[in-house]
Amino acid sequence: MTIKQVSQKLGVSSDTLRYYERIGAVPPVNRTHGGIRDYSESDISWAELACCMRSAGLPVEAIVEYRKLYEQGSDTIAARLLLLKTQMESLKAQRLKIDETIKRLNYKISKYEIAVKTGELKWD
Image: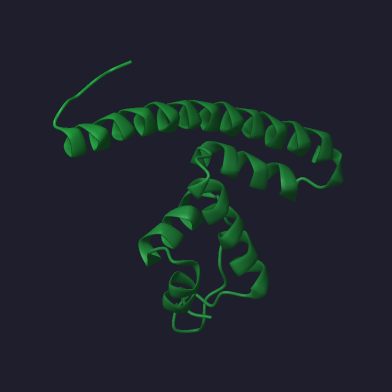
């Protein structure tokens, strides 16, 4: 697949895919004789993983580190597991903060909706 096709499939820009390749979040993509990137299924799988992890808020450094560990083989399984668990805990903490913010905003929204109907703004 071309970079344009992969870009459309994953819903990210071609620039993003090039960036992930340049920083090492995904392995180098093979190219045609004309120099055009030719994504294999494995390349697409790595790009999907990088996009998923990034959209979840993981820093690119963690994605790059994961890939480096993966390429070192089975001796790094424990290190990869630790990296993923650490990132999971970070995401859970972020989710907790977001959930608290949503709860607070929902409360404020409900008060303002009542105020719009009644003409009075009351905070309990």
